[in-house]
Picture 1 (cartoon, rainbow, N blue to C red):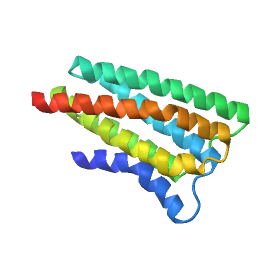
Picture 2: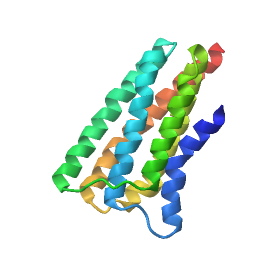
Picture 3: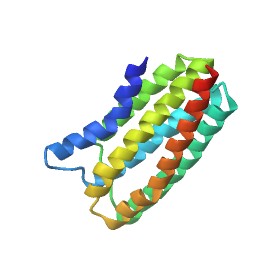
Picture 4: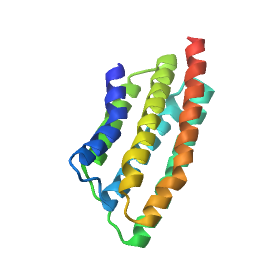
Length: 176
């Protein structure tokens, strides 16, 4: 059961890091696509948690993910429109999308406390990996200062999401 979660959570950092290992980090259009895809993945999982979560905390967290990540995507879409940059699909964004689909498939097969635990465990791992990628890949490789500034601006929200998810994870662990 943990395998899809670990594979998905690692997709962003591994794929983006692979580009660095080859000496070429992602371009700004690729970074824009990674940002939008990463947010959409969490929006989709959040919507499922809103409707399928067993605890109020998990439902509320899912709703917060939908709201917050939708807001980041609106900012990113406004920026790429302003800059006339077309987000470019790339191995990292493809990996994220596939991982998101696998996660949803896994979550849809679960109910009750098992759903809540799997969703929150995934959110912790996912936000840890996204923060690693933000710090090690996206910010260092963003050439456009406005794109870099957007990523820096939204980073604290990812930290807050991670801390919130860890708090829920701790509570779920005590309830089991």
